[in-house]
Image 1 (cartoon, rainbow, N blue to C red):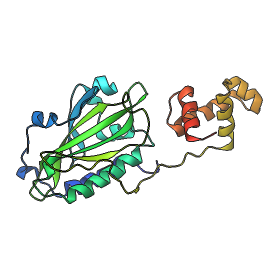
Image 2 (cartoon, rainbow, N blue to C red; image 1 turned 90 degrees about the horizontal axis):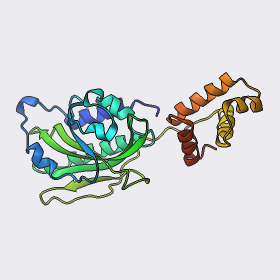
Image 3 (cartoon, rainbow, N blue to C red; image 1 turned 120 degrees about the vertical axis):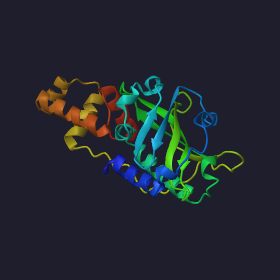
Image 4 (cartoon, rainbow, N blue to C red; image 1 turned 90 degrees about the vertical axis):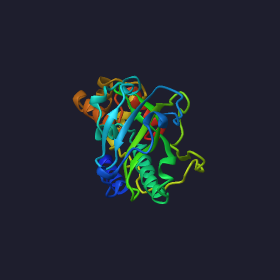
Length: 254
């Protein structure tokens, strides 16, 4: 993407937090009571996010079974950087819509809405899984500035293998729900641009040729071929040739 996802997300979260002061904030509901409202259909972990400071204050140990990381290994910039490049604009557009939606709620409505959407994220093993993110507000001030949220990330890869991310606002305690909410496309995915030589190398990789074979066919050194392969992996955000080829075919790069 042509921008840092954390920087953009942080701007949105600061607008959500407004001028919230910790001294005048109290927890609106017990955390365990809130957890009962979450839809859990797979491995999951929960976390507490400080909106004003843009930090995780708590990540449960179950993150290891979902993403492979120990809680101490994960901070917000690192987490956001592992969201699939194609889903990062969706994440930011969803967060911007969340800001707009919560600005329309009354003081009493704020704790009675759960924000739900999905996206793909890379695990420690290098694979992508699809998680369902569900978030409720657990601390806010008299000016409706959000301070802390409780979230749950559930692995739903076995339920949703493809398709676009979907945003919903789920009403609790009698509030109406809004499913599949339309969002403004403020952020968009940067187009992957390959050089002519990179396209040639990619085409030969798809044919199953090795680096030394490509080197001879294109009359370039094996070192140059390997450099092109590394650049292709970086541009497509993949970690191996199989994933590279799969990504290239899906995105129509060849």
